[in-house]
Amino acid sequence: MKEIQFDETQLGNIQAIGEILFSGDSDDPRSWNYKRELVRPKIKWWRISAFTVLFFASAAGLYCLLTALSLSPITSVRICFAFMLIVVLIFLKHILICLVRIYQCFAPASLRNKCRFEPSCSQYMILSLEKYGLIKGLSKGIDRLKRCNTDDGGFDYP
Image 1 (cartoon, rainbow, N blue to C red):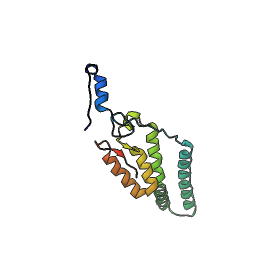
Image 2: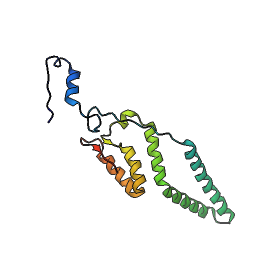
Image 3: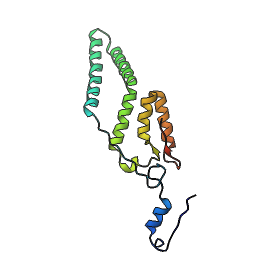
């Protein structure tokens, strides 16, 4: 329990009383006066654009190749969709990390500062995806999002 000493000069100043009552260690994420240093990552739009163009161009090229080999158009479309699904599943971890970084870049600070943990939930998701891979990292990140904005908090690394 925190012991607080008041004198007569502080009784009329509500802001000073609030600072004394609710002040805490500014390095502790559970503290009232903790300020997170928000990092706005740089998005490499050219890489996202190049990947998207290459993805759809390769699917279109595969369709043209399959129809040139005299496969039916329906079969060619099915094979192209299977190819696209496999490519998305292979790169899903990187796609999710990219989406989280876009969120970090454009989400307002008032929304991002609500997290009571350090690192923030979005950074935790990136760290867990990089450390554990797609399945386990995604489940650990979702579990962390479920625990966010509760009274307890603090330092929690994957």
